[in-house]
Amino acid sequence: MRSDGAVHAADSSMHQGLAERLVRLHREVKGTGELTAVTRIAVALYDERTDILKTFIHSSDGGSPLDHSSARLDRIPGLHQLALNGMPRVINDLDAVALSGQEHATRLAAVGYRSSYTVPIRTKGQFYGFLFINASEKDFFTPQVTQRLHPYAELIGQMVMRELDAVHMMRAAVRVIRRVSTVRDEETGAHLARMARYARLVAQKLAGKFDLSDEFVEYLFQFAPLHDVGKISVPDHILFKPGKLTFEEFNVMKTHVVHGIDITDMLIFDFGSQSLPHFDLLRNVVAYHHEALDGSGYPHGLAGDRIPLEARIATVADVFDALTSVRPYKQAWTNEAAFDLLRREAGIKFDPECVAALLDSTAEIEAIQVRFEETVLD
Ligand SMILES: [Fe+2]
Ligand SMILES: [Fe+2]
Image (tube, rainbow, N blue to C red):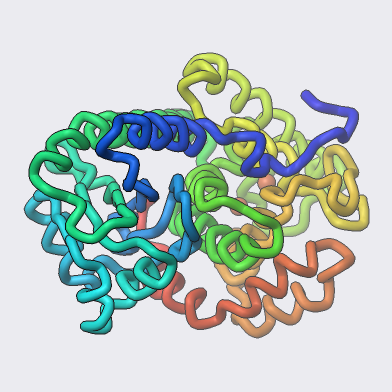
């Protein structure tokens, strides 16, 4: 356990695994003579439960006009069709498509990309997202060129799927732990689904300011639901107590963080840190989600930005959802009442920028609350 407080946000420079490999592959592609005009390779991921497609990693020579974008797949008919049929698509004149008013094409054409090759990433009927390859020349993606690109596209697809599978396996392992343990968490699957999406909203809004990569945003979304994994060690009579905890009981409750760190470390050890990407981010969320900005939190009593950013984001997302949910000891608060509390405690307990980003997202929050009602299982 890190006890010296020398922690930093697991920022993009600390976990460039997949993004870095993509940059290296891109360099290799450009080194192969006739493929030098390939100026951008990007991957977007699909969230099946919300039908959202969002940018993930990219390697771009020119501008990167689509960072931090997300959209409903069913609102992008062209891509929706590709996701269904699994076929690649070539657009050899992005300017012409841009003229027809297609927004993404307009943004790509504006920074000098002239053609595109899109490959759905899917296996055994499961759709993971898209690989986008762009070139600085019009009419670049001839059948010969796409054939040359085919093995690279395969390789990138495999890399992405393998990495996501490791994350999904980790989450599945945690779900199993929670279900087989005799202690049932009072936090529902719906709470976890909502708070992960609030965390993603906040991270997306702060991405520009804190230079957060789309990869960071995605892993925060994936790992945020594991924040309370240590609660399986808290006895039922404390976890489900329908009233205020005594001092002693609260001390037992607090141990869920340290137990959570132990469990995370065991999982990371069992899975192998090599195969589990960005475990720093996971560990930071588990270890620091009860720290408070003024140093009054637990178990480390860290203050200010010594608390990693991913934990500050997860805390605001977690608290907001806890306030607006029914718990054994309380009724659900209205969104307005929860916002008021966050506003009052911003800069004291909570990171004011995380709070501001959440307060700026009322429409998205309401959509998440409708989509993930209490009956939804994780
Ligand atoms: Fe917790
Ligand atoms: Fe929680």
